Image 1 (cartoon, rainbow, N blue to C red):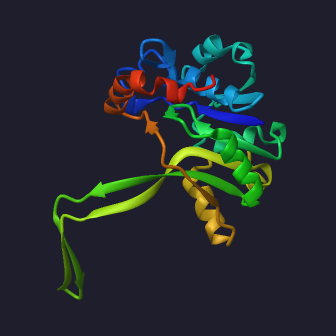
Image 2 (image 1 turned 45 degrees about the vertical axis):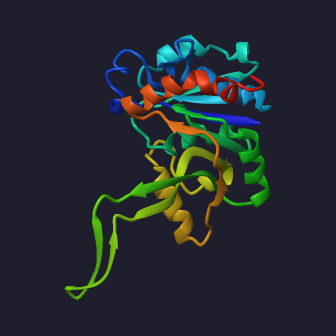
Image 3 (image 1 turned 120 degrees about the vertical axis):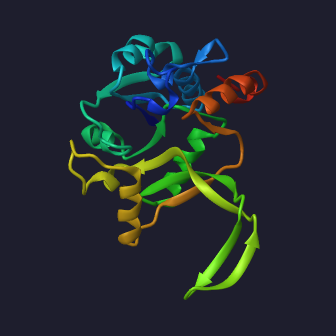
Length: 237
């Protein structure tokens, strides 16, 4: 089983923590980098190889991770010379990827079963599988529904339930065929293209632990919760 970790972003929203370190290497719990936790999880789940897409401060990631042998993984690298979006880096390595593989952001903490996501993707025969997580959004205002300048409905401070993308995907190499290597390709563009073509992605629903470390508040929460969730995140690793 093969995984691609997207680790080329500048981590602008997480500054100042990412001024000197790439976001996947910021420490969690004063002991582990985010990327180390992810690599340990992938190894424990049965993955044997991994490609890390690097860009900003990528040489530091190379120096830290090396060949991946300490996690019993064969790790290679793909360098992003200019921003290519979420899915664009996959195009430059397309010919080196297996028929089905896992793709994930390098800045998430979760106890998601990565191997099961890939298995579900293969079984679904869908072009793309998206791991999804429930989110509840509270609206702090009274919400009006209007038609032709008339108020036809009113709801006081409603809550809206969504399922959001976790930044973990099962991808089939064939799905990338229509796109040109070296050009940017966003996750949103890919999903909209698949929907337009009548070939919708498969949803993998997950309700466990998930934290996207995108902002300083998220990073502070991750550190505060790591002691409690350490055995959950590193079980079997």
